[in-house]
Image 1 (cartoon, rainbow, N blue to C red):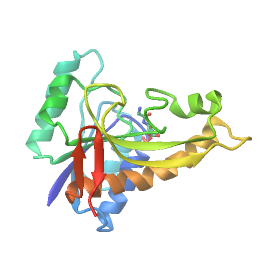
Image 2: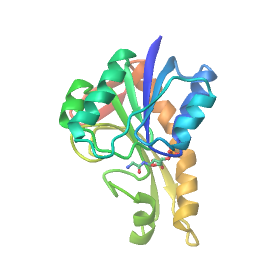
Image 3: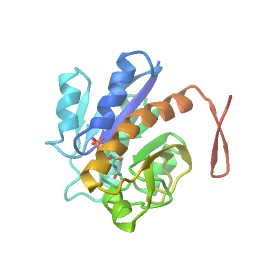
Image 4: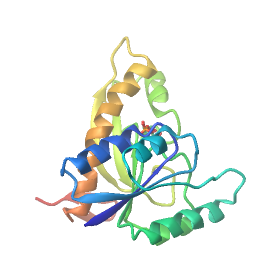
Length: 200
Ligand code: GAR
């Protein structure tokens, strides 16, 4: 059985959606560990309630590499095949990326390469785009720059608020994150440069 390691910092709704699909047998893997750098992250509490193995690894006041080393030690301990960043609000060091290259996924609430970084939904609304959405991508050394695995489009409505738009995007996030995990775990992708092609 393949092993997933989840890294989160907050609410954890993407993690919950993944956990739900794992439980339902729609993702051929188990969640071996849920790691949070925030002690009060709702996602960490939910993981505990679900009976999953959880770890709180504080990041505050730590050098990036020192924190990453601690996370990597836990991921190695559990022999993690695929690392899923699910609202994990820290940038990983090149050292971490190198160690897990091609095996780290992230979800971002915009159609990358548009609106990388924070508050992507609000910035998309304020920019006036008619369509935005979400992206699951492999993580490389940049911020939200890695090869794109899956995307979903969400229209921006005239009377949208950032919150309403974010909620509709989140629904799509929950759907495509599991889809991307399955594609990678089942070896159904072929990577050509920046392009992640889906095998038929
Ligand atoms: C999600 O919308 C995710 O796309 C976003 O944070 C939210 C986490 O929600 N991630 C980023 O903005 C990363 N740059 P969740 O904790 O409920 O999954």
